[in-house]
Image (tube, rainbow, N blue to C red; front, side, top):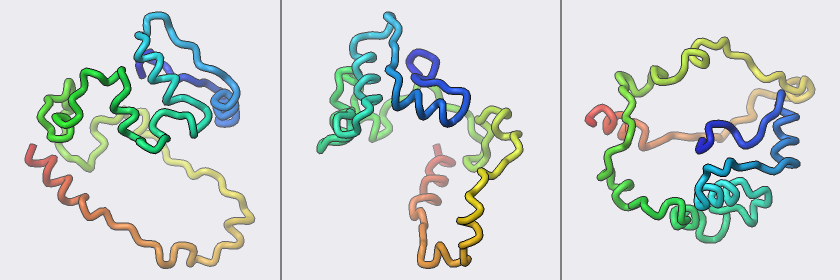
Length: 144
């Protein structure tokens, strides 16, 4: 996002995965030392060495020099005006997504036929997920 293009490219999923695992990223000279360092740290191939994956997790990211001017407490308390605030009439609508995506015909990823053949219909028995904060978030967005 900092340079306007993804760090890895490929014509299909296999090429992209190969690029991610095999290629290194090149950075433009216009990138600051801090920006280049955080990108390298977040794109570290070895998860054990990747920024944010250590014992201090997100604190390591928040403490990186790239974010030295960020007041995380003020952001958490919503005391900082965002640089861009999209207009949103309905928080459940996709009005701020590009029509290329919202008008695209959905397609299912082809599954392995042997998996489908062996399904009994009770694969998700006992599974439950309820976001207790969903309605609260929607009401909060409407009041803003």
